[in-house]
Length: 490
Image (cartoon, rainbow, N blue to C red; front, side, top):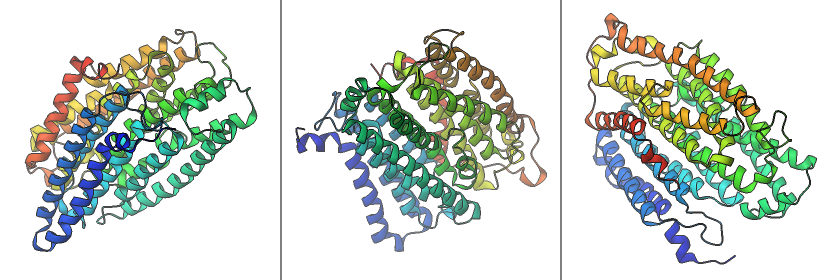
């Protein structure tokens, strides 16, 4: 391996910008926090963090496109650059929608941990080696565990963080054990060499065990069934902006990382999906997880009266559809999956942003808490209308086109009569189910009258208002012009 540390530093300038920004947030708060009020401390921290994210985006664009760097440890292709920019944009919107200081005892620490989590996401986008991939994933995961429990005004937040941490630790053990078995079988942690070794290696039981272990860890990170048990509690108990980051940037970076691991590193062990039966491989495992996630996520969402838990179960259903994109990436490439994950992330950040703003004026847990939103704040109601319809897959919004290109890519694997075709039909049927529970949200926000004790107008702060309007505009623009995202990935 050729080591060029100047090249490595240039490749990691986005991550360096985020780390320096996080340290600056903490440093400024230490020296000036005692003399400032809570809102002033939060504004200063968010401003510095947004500048750090902007610097990271600049360095991402300036890095150019390369196949690999630093001896193959990192990859700077078009997918990596697009993913970096995507997670940075989602992190910036999350920062703009940070909850009021009344829910954060330590606003600077909260903002700094968001930057640390984003650093993990951007590293996941460029990882080309098992060790770097695992370290990036755990940096992001450990940060998210803390963010989930940051709201000290709610006991549910601490409960969510504990469940997330315990189940996350177990899933990390499964993932690390599976990766170590892959290293033992192939003698390498670099994806290219692993693929070469697996291509000449006969199928064996140890390889199947390793793949199952990796799928367990992957299923947890993706909130896919049956590894989803943490998701409803975390979405319900975490601060709204924390839940937004978990549901958006985490999913985008995670699905891109595992698509790269599975197809670039473990591609020879994929098996087949186009035929009715198919050879044993990780594709069959992913297909099974996808089917279970589609069924459980969408059907369980029908029974939810808590808006956050409803979004959590819908996220499980969307994870099942994204897994279909992972399977199709072997033939159609990662562009359909990336578009789906990115546009889903935009809509989810927007939905949780509306929840965060409503929570500043009162409670926003049950569907009934959104009743009469159009009267209390037309701006929030219109934005929520756009986000929810995009999640439901209604044209011409971005969510519709995301589902369309993923389902089309899956059908190219062999048509409706194959396993991939049947899985696609299931995904389409569950999308119809999803439309019903998404309309329940809109029924409360747009049709129902507000409760007598919650009829006062909602004041929307300037920064969250701008963020929500930009997110809604992106949903419309990317639905009408999907090539704006698709052409980023050659």
